[in-house]
Amino acid sequence: MSPVTPYHISSPDLATSSRLAAHIGSKLRGGEVIELVSDLGGGKTTFVRGFAHGAGSIDRVTSPSFTLTNVYRTPQLELHHFDFYRLNDPGILRAELVEIIADPGNVVIIEWAGIVAEVLPAERLTINIRVTGETSRDYILACPDNLSYLLPPGAVRPTVA
Image 1: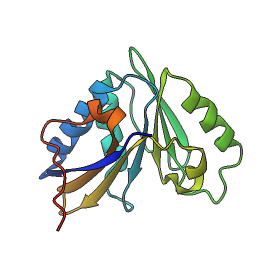
Image 2: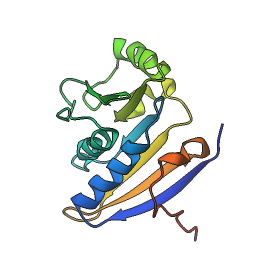
Image 3: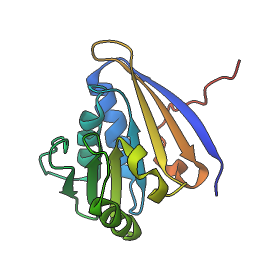
Image 4: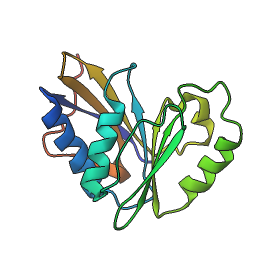
């Protein structure tokens, strides 16, 4: 397993956050698993819009809070967006998730991933989103070395006190 290094990025506004997500989306190769972590209203689905746009999708990106999963097509990949917020038990979705992760032509983006943590690969990009203002956010990207190609310019390692 690759070492996981945290990187920090501050975004003063939604446009900067969208560019950050689009940059990551443009670097997707297939087979990546991305976990988005934040409170309700933190901007996870907005971030997924940026991923999809950067990856070349023209699909309309919406929150899968009620549908549990949405798929967005790009010229090269399928982005599978899961939201497990409303579930106490993922049931059959757990098996479906395992199959989708196994396909190297897929990228999996998961919100509220704790309920399926045991089936997620250890080597995934975890993005913690912290609201710092009405439109500003801090992002901590926990990135294993083998996924460092996803990191945008300007990502810095947080200093340890």
